Length: 401
Picture 1 (cartoon, rainbow, N blue to C red):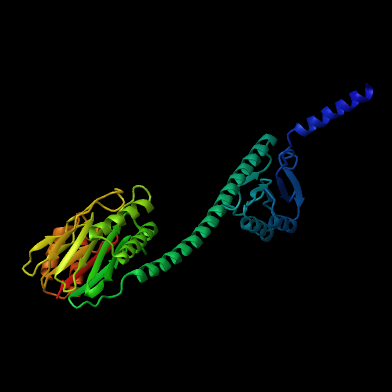
Picture 2 (cartoon, rainbow, N blue to C red; picture 1 turned 90 degrees about the vertical axis):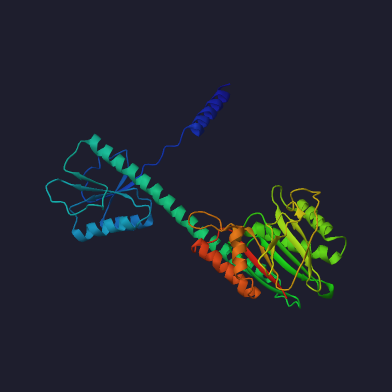
């Protein structure tokens, strides 16, 4: 029984020792100079007497929370100590002490407190404790600043990588745009200005058999990389469905709509204008899937909107589309555009609008397609007063020969 009781008591004492909270180590402090204030600070800090040289080395090694320095040290020694403390991150708290009978050197901004002469022990402890708290706060701030600086550097690296990726993506997107078209009956000029490096506007010209030509213009909801990926998907879908050669043009757009409805996230959609010009350039068959209406400008200035079609792509799985048809004449000008053109705003926030675009087209209807295109873009730029665009901008002018 005696041995068992002894073992049990030993186990309880060991358990108590394990549960006892650890005593926090006292902050390390260096005292450079006379032994003043050492007794007053006993129990608050671990105060170590040091020479100036020893203190400089200890500060450089780190772990010093407080430097208690005699302000009567030779000027060179004193300034060397304070400089060593100022260079250390986090900087130790610094208290200068003087016996009150000597004139203090200029210490403004270089020490946290100055204790002059004899002070009560309670006051000395309170002032040292306050200085240490301030030092801890400053150390925490310095640590946060260092973390922020590191995060900023990491963000800068990521930003440079993203900028390079966007630059490459922009090059890829532009390489996917159709090459210049040489058609016996159509003169085509186009300009694509993405809001960012890459955008969600899409256009394509696809030669068909016997000199026919398919023209497509689309605008994917959103901007940047997601919109550009969906625009590339839309282009691939249009081209792949054209290669099958099955069904009417409105059935082709219906199939593209179902594909877009299946692959795009809920709530995203795209507009699409799809048209086919016959070999002689005299008939345009088209389907407008929710796109801003392109228009045909006749030589006499009359305008015909191309508005037959149906809903935007991706809104309804089984959307139905109607086909439109218009006969073309030599000198007719067909203008295709995205919302970045007509929704360009001036300084007062007023949109450029479709009527201004039609007026600009009328003023240049006798010009070649490229001259007419840049005349319209110039009018748009003048209207905005040079303000940057807030959306992708695509403008296409087709002149019938």
